[in-house]
Image (cartoon, rainbow, N blue to C red; front, side, top):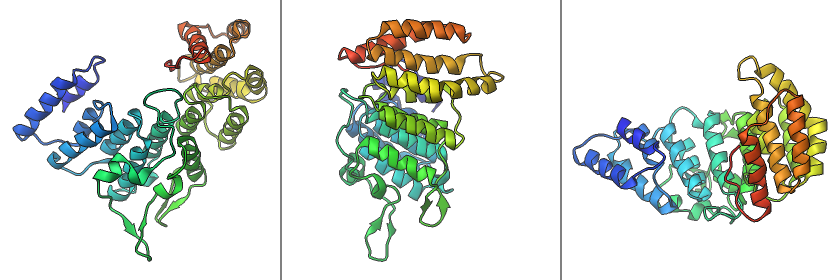
Length: 338
């Protein structure tokens, strides 16, 4: 397992050698565990490859899939552009694993991450169609442990809430389930969303910086998070700001009225535990991305001065954020995560 992990974390992965290593392990009877699955799921590049790999290794496992393994499978389907299969595997996980995994916020955030990947505009991996979970690659090849209703029809835990929706609408639906702490089959309540949850939904709303401006919805999302006491950390603020697309006037107004004061307040609190300015820089980088989308280098220059005034120095990532936004405006893809 350690060897597998070392191989898949290398930037230049030789997948052939890793699969040869897997064949060797299976041939000599080395049992696979959940962490082996997590490592291997970094390899596939298509939905069929994820499904095929899972079918190949699951019978060789010494134990059933654990939550960590399920999360890696959900993430793998999200990465290759199959959020429908990711949703199916999530539903399977919370029904088939022990310990009420529907109470684990990390599991819900993993699903939100897979849905966010389906919202990226203009990429080959983007699944811009509505979710068709029951006909997904995962659904066609796996037998879910289903809870039977009185009518004899299968009752899904989450599928019924999101099937047929776009990835964005599904993300918002999941967030609402978390905000309301909806009960699942009367057993337990879904966990409240945290900053990462809101960050992932904001990433869905912005298409990771590629979608059209969603200024009003972004500001409402931000205010809901603040009302619920969610931390205004840099990654969340960056994601929310990118939702403004090329709406430079809208984002500057929101920065002045809501986002900027929250960023400054959180910076004062968090600076005791993190490098000074880290969260503010991430938020300012979001503003730079909007400047790039709006093709407004003059406003970007003003923001750079504002950063210096706030005792945070513009860095290389700040400039990259501007150019990433500019690439989107000129028809390219935003592949920058700053």
